[in-house]
Length: 448
Ligand code: SAH
Ligand code: SF4
Ligand code: F3S
Image 1 (cartoon, rainbow, N blue to C red):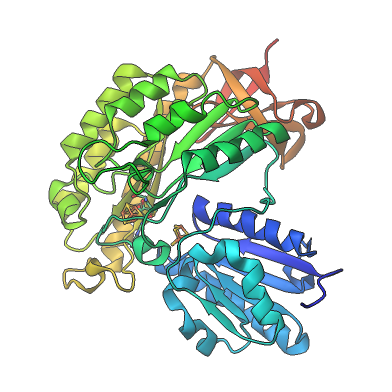
Image 2: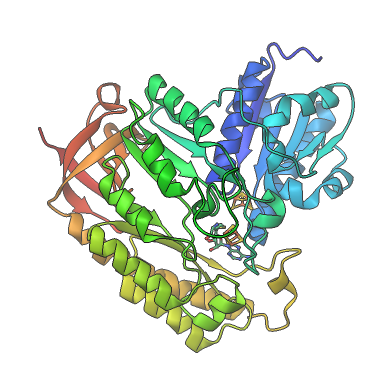
C-alpha cells in the first residue's frame, strides 16, 4: 500500500444532501488511511470531486474543475484524481476515456468502499466502480462538517420513475438501513455532542419498505413514522428533521407523529414540481394538485405555524402558459417559506429528454424568472410572522460576515443571526427575539 503519511486530500462536493453525507464518510475513510485535510485543492495530493448530474449545468461544472486539475497532474504525476457521485455513475468508463489523468471513477453506492478502491489505484490501476451493489454498512467514522448538526442516511436510492429525473439511474434501487443501525449512529452522535440530526432519503416516505417483515401490500413494519418514534428519545439529540417527502406517499400519521414528538421540528420539505395535473401526470408523479393541497391543509390543521418548503420545475416538455400559471397559482395559494426552482433540463436516459414537445430556452428562462419573483414576494410576506416573536435558535456557527454575531436556525429551519460569542453559544439552544426579517433569514436579540 502506498504510504499516505504526510499526504493531503481535498474533496469538493456538488449537489444534494446525499452527496454531502457521502463526502463526509469518504473524508472519514481518507483520514483513517492517514491523509490530512487540505483546504486548497491546488496543494492537495489527492483530489476527489463528488459530483451531481441533476441538471446539465451541474454536470458541466465538474468538467471545468476537472480540466484544471488534470493539467496540474501533468506537472505533479503523483496527484490522485477521483470522480465520485452521480456523474461518475452516469458516465463510468467514458470519463476515464475522456480524461486520461483520472485514476478512479466511483458511483455513489461505492462511497464506503473508497479504501479498497484506492488500493487498486496505488497498485497502478485505473479503477471504475459503478456496478450496483448492496451498500455496506458504514463502519468508519464520518468527518463531519458541523459539530452541531449531522446528516443520517436512512434510505439510499429511489424506486420512483419521475420522467425527468436521473436519480434512480445514478443512485440505484431503494436500500433502507435497519432501525438498529440508524439508532446506533444517532446514539454515537448524541454522545459526541451533536444536537440536531437530519434523516435523509430521496424519497424518505419509502423508508423500510424493502426491509424484512415488509409486505408488498398493506402497511409495512418499519415506516418513517415508526422510525421517528423509535429514535426519538436518544439522549443528547434535541432536534430531528427529515427530507425529502414525496406527496404520493405522505401520510397523516406522519404529521401526527411530528406534532406529538417534541424533538421533531415543524418543517416539511415536500416538492410538488408542478401545479398542473396534466404535467404532474406526464412527470409520473402519482398525485394531483388537489392531493398536494390537501396535504398542506392537514399539516396546517395540526401545526398552523409549520414551515413548508418545496421544489418546482418550469418548462417541462409540453408545458403551456396556462399550465405554468397553475404552478404560479399553487405558489400564490400555499405561500411557501422557501421554494427551490429550476428550469427543466433534459437528462440522459430519462424518458422526457427525448420527447419532441420541448419548451424553448427563452420560454423556460422567462417562466423561471416570473416564478422566482413570485416566490420572493410570497416569502417576504410569510417571513413577517416572525417579527417580534421569540424563537428557539440552535446555534451552529459564527456569522462569517460578522464575528460579533452567531448564526443558527429556528425550528422551522430559518437562518437567524444575533449578537453573541460562538465559544460560549455553539451547540446551545437559546431564545432570541426577532427584530428584523428578510425573505429567507432573520436577525434578533437574545432574551434571558
Ligand atoms: N427526491 C426528490 C428530489 C430530488 S432531485 C423529489 O422527489 O422531489 C431535486 C430537485 O431537482 C427535484 O425536486 C426537482 O425539482 C429538480 N430536478 C430533478 N430533475 C430535474 C431536471 N431534469 N430538470 C430540472 N430540475 C430537475
Ligand atoms: Fe427523482 Fe422522482 Fe426519485 Fe425524487 S422521487 S429522486 S424526483 S425519481
Ligand atoms: Fe445531484 Fe445525485 Fe443529489 S444527481 S441532486 S447529487 S442524488
